[in-house]
Length: 295
Ligand SMILES: Nc1ncnc2c1ncn2[C@@H]1O[C@H](COP(=O)(O)OP(=O)(O)OP(=O)(O)O)[C@@H](O)[C@H]1O
Image (cartoon, rainbow, N blue to C red; front, side, top):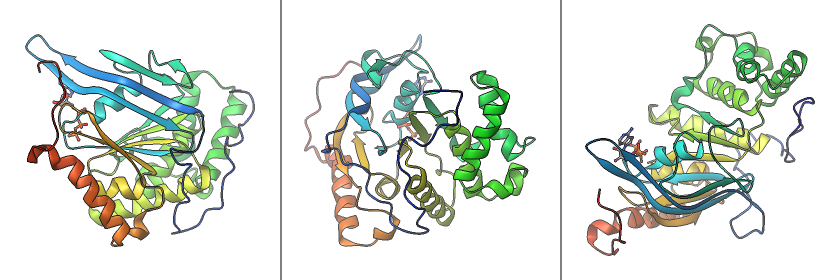
């Protein structure tokens, strides 16, 4: 990636269709190079007293423009997996590769968007917030950084608010600033860890809708963690279902045809039921537990 010119989006952006159904991302069966590849990933926390296995031999692959959701119950290792993909934790076993290169630490090719967009600095304007990571990275000349910031702010439709402070913006606008801030660094993938978990149901739905609209417009690649089945189906084009602790892959499901408009339809209900079954069947004793290390 060049840092001197303002990058054009890597993907042709479709028109923003307000309130519309998100177009399907390319499905898993489309032959495309893998963007992110996770292979046999075991992640553990070792403390003097405990050895906690967070994920056990997880395999998955994310392609360009996927909205890839990691879904599983609390404690199954979703956040830990995102941490490892972010480069903040080393695998005990297995590999994580981005565009074929092993991940060995954090990098601007993977940008994390935190819960409630707390990375936004309240004393900085929208423009200053978007400029901040570019400035501290030292990757961009001042003029390039300014042009790039203006371009991404425009893409997320916040040009009129570029001199506003975060506390004067709605939740959806803050999310767009947080995403613009991340996108300005031209990451290969955006990592979101339960960004809407603390919101009330109505606001959460609105934010999901805004996220899908933004994806429709910009077509970034997203990895999104949630423990809500409904949110996974609404947001995701593909869903990786993990078992309860330690997280193992139960299934990977296609949800590219469903979004918030499908809530209440038989298709949405069927997928929701299927996921519910996958998440809880071990409690009914249907799934044999694979060999795993002592916890
Ligand atoms: N810093 C840590 N030290 C030791 N154990 C940890 C640490 N962080 C997480 N764990 C443990 O690792 C396991 C996976 O935790 P993780 O936070 O990844 O789960 P999660 O699926 O994201 O859960 P939630 O949905 O509640 O956020 C849990 O058993 C948790 O207690």
